[in-house]
Length: 264
Image: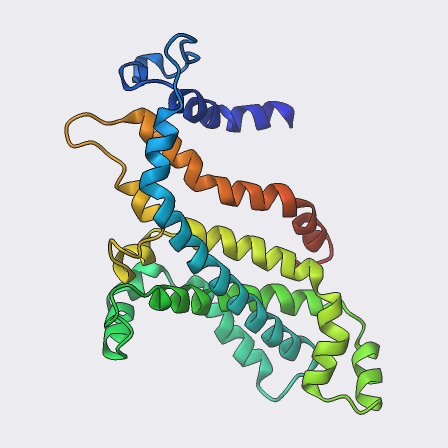
């Protein structure tokens, strides 16, 4: 496992050492070399931060509501599908699952047209169309995760709540929600990574002013000479939030997986 980990960290090594080199040393021939102690610099990071800072904030504004909306709606859907069944619930659940297999490329043009017809693209500086798209496309996977997780919770708890007079919302809020932390950890990490790293939706549902960091990262390029040091620093800076999420929430993610969030 250590050997595999080191193998997959090789690109991170190249990114890191190149980001501290001046442009003259940031070449493919010197990619594996450590920065020269006499010439290594952090100016590249300062330059890249100035270019990416607005887009990093746009990505935060995008990811937080999109992740929360899809996770909460997925939790409610999963509860109904698992414990509060109704006629045709299996068919509805199957239709939800179909949403997981729709490629983004297949809906690019109709999605953009629908957003335009609804007047959501009129405000060029709004991230709302992109937030809405990610929230909707995240509901199927969140529903699947919560449905399988809730299926492992004893039905006797739901029956006891019904005997005490609790309805759908009260049962969810008082019984299911307090036991949902592992599943929420899985969906939050999953969705945050998906939303933060998305490039396709971001390209055709935003513009230069409100573009997230993935679009800005694509624009960090030279016209005649590729600034590899800036590109490497920008890539590390753009990936840092998802890396921190896994570092601080990774154990909750594994706990959610072991609790059955992705089983069934």
